[in-house]
Image (cartoon, rainbow, N blue to C red; front, top):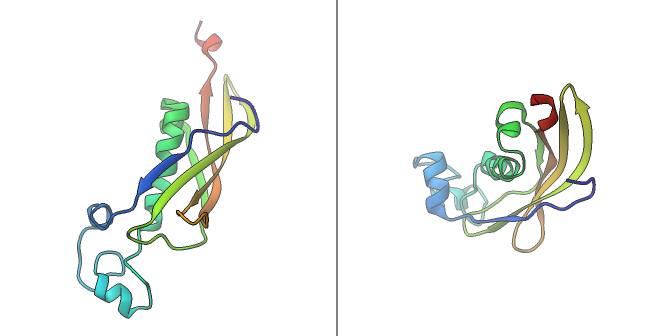
Length: 136
């Protein structure tokens, strides 16, 4: 992992079923009630913002495994809504690597984009890359 290296993108189809599973189906919800979402001015139900965070977490676990589970952090801003029917792609680029005790903290610039290339979330995620020499 080198600074500037792009991580493999993670693409998710944001179906209404996926939103319903995440949110729990409720009437009068902009997340799970299409008619209510339209009444509130949205073209379709919105995905919960934390769904994007969950996908960033998936990318970071693929990168760092236990080092993200035990020492991970995410800081994110949700800049545009994600709607049912969107295709969301999570991107990451290694921003820095800093010594953290016997480990290295890897910080990744992360962002999500919809199928039109519009950024919906921006931020950073970090976790620990264990130094295998420290356990010898």
